[in-house]
Image 1 (cartoon, protein in one colour):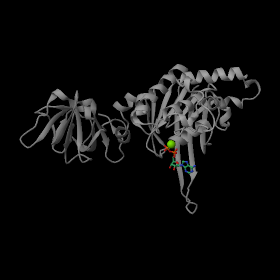
Image 2 (cartoon, helix red, strand yellow):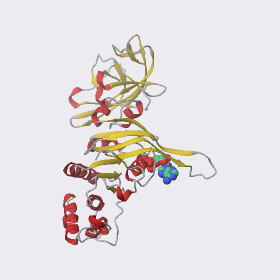
Image 3 (cartoon, helix red, strand yellow):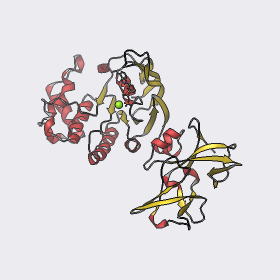
Image 4 (tube, protein in one colour):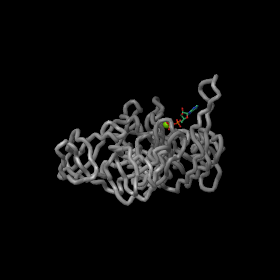
Amino acid sequence: MKIILQNLTKIFPSKNKKSNDVVVAVNDLNIEIPDGTLVGLLGPSGCGKSTTLYMICGLQKPTEGKVFFGDKDVTFLEPEHRGVGLVFQNYALYPHLTVKQNILFPLQNLKGDQKLSKEEALKRAREAADLVQIGDLMDRKPSELSGGQQQRVAIARALVKAPRVLLLDEPLSNLDARLRLQTREEIKRIQRETGVTTVFVTHDQEEAMSISDIIVVMKEGVVQQVGEPQKVYDDPDNLFVAKFLGTPPINVFDGSVSGGSLYIGSEKVLDDVNVPDRPVVVGLRPEGFVPDENGRFSGKLKSVEVMGRDSSIVFTSEFSQKPSARAIVDSEAGTPLDAEGNVHFNLKRTKVHIFDAENGNRIRF
Ligand code: ADP
Ligand code: MG
């Protein structure tokens, strides 16, 4: 099912009753989610991800704008008539019911020609349980399951009605690191197997990058960029997106363009920069450094962390916006130092991004 969000806006009254301020949780959001894709809604806490998700499922009504499922305007359709499955961070299972009863639950209120025989309902519940690989836990209570198993039950319960749209709000946040990795692979597999159009909300960029066909990066209710994860990483539209994606994060320096070259301090780090003279912010991806004793860019070496194949070269620079910067290089590359203890690099052109120092917009060169 294709989903279209059109000029979607949600304004909440202030929680402080004395103030007239309002919270613009979602601000004029426009996206089209193609049928059968998994879209990751990504951004820091409070940026409007959950509110967007709740407007897709109908738990929140937009202040302005529309939601379409296919060609149908569902903006004011009640959640139970939208054919959506919803999974929350905290599982929200019924503690007194078994796994089987929890998964069966959504099938019990079906009315009219949707009503299922007991056998058919059980068959569907078993299929959903098998899909998430908890078929052998059907008679347990939630308290007898691990967090990862509980979340699988919640996913089976969301899938049992064969929803047209699956919505997941930070479903992995309560799991420990190892389970988080494993469960995210599982969600990707389940999504591929069922082909259900899925919106996956997370504040974790690595999670969103690894699981999504398309990511939507949000900040303060406003969409910053939409695209394939690798494309957004390689070609960010602004400094916020560049900083939000990537571990270790992009290194940020104060610089300038002068006479068609890019400078950081007095070092001319890149030629053929087709931008009029101006101050800029320079973003350098950690993988964009090539150690070279004659390299054009330098910093004061702090430490080298060898991690098998790769090494992190940590250095300081008076032009860095953070206390230190980090280059990730091949461990065999060595660390060329001069007599003052400075490490020298050349920069890979495609890993250098420049931004407007005022508004953070990307300046392509
Ligand atoms: P996220 O899921 O990205 O963390 P939310 O969508 O939950 O963000 O919230 C976006 C903004 O809207 C936040 O500033 C939050 O405080 C505010 N907000 C969310 N729900 C309500 C509500 N029911 N009443 C008032 N403000 C709300
Ligand atoms: Mg949220």
